[in-house]
Length: 385
Length: 130
Image (cartoon, rainbow over all chains, first blue to last red; front, side, top):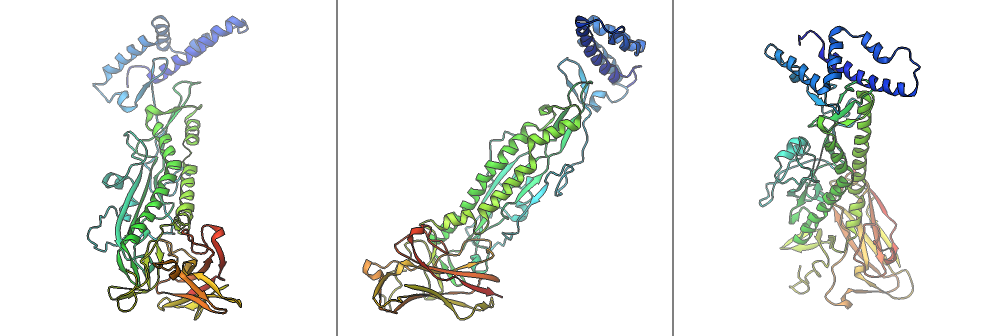
């Protein structure tokens, strides 16, 4: 910019002068202690152009000066990139546009933490092995694959069966709970298969840590701003499961009723995780959304660092993520509270022992109460399996 | 009444078929009647969870008539049940069994969900699967 004076400096100076001018009036109403007013001192330190601007400001007001300077700026736009394009502007309460110089930060990387030790990447548990094998069973929908499920953002966009959690209304960061439902069926894992398992580790969550942007105060004594860069501060919790084959499962025979009950059991795990997500992650997503983008910046603190610290305290990223992961692990780890509660249900599947089914002997006949009835007696008597 | 869990050995290879039996023994000098539905087990519970569905408890089907569910045990008579397992995971496996004093639908591996429905429990059987 080549208009003879540094406009940024002038604008900042005029705003400082306004504050000092008001302070001066206040001082004079109280005492006349100062032999030289702060206004005088300020004027002494300005060149003639700056003093001219100050006089214009006093006689015509800030808005006039702003328009005048803007007209000077527009004259330069034919020769070079405008300052506006280089630095977004935002109106202040005084009606003066000031330049915002955000604190640039690198794009989020899939690492464990960001520079503020906020969790990033994926949290996975080794409790539930992640494995997906398409057994080729007909009539089974393949809703998601674990490899994709853990990729978070892009998976959410692609998974037509995904259930979005919360009531988010657009924006650049689709935060989500993805209920992948029943991904496949297979041999029950008691017999070494993949059936009857979740496809994601308990407590797992895919994260993109928030990237904080800041702007220093527009003028001395003003407040800084901090906000979250769009597309960051995202979380994706994905859960899906594999059902079990109906009928022969190695030494187990699993009835249709038991297979359906097993599906319901796995869905209870998803429901449990969803509830924990609602308690811990959904409020986090809301907090992030409310402060995503410069327009939603938190205005607080003497400088950008202070504003960012205040915003981090509001977002409370790590605590929320950890709380989710721990609660999900407690509830949904094998033998956890979800298993215990469901196992005690009156309709839970049971092992009715050895039985002949269609001429094949199975060591364990898995059914739901009241079970298959007594085994047939030799010659066709007795109950009906 | 006494309840015991028995197996041929406490260390098994994964490739072997593990046979476990639970025995309810009338260790008194008077006759006793059991309802076959009161006996729950053997229930295998891998010490390190298998990462999926809970193992099911072992029970018996309900007979068509109430009297068919009753088992009369003379003194030192035995009523029992055998279950076999082929694919238990490597590591420790604890096997449970218990006897109810009334019918209960809420059955966990090591006890009924309703505590007052428990009559006696067998000493858990610890197996090592290699």
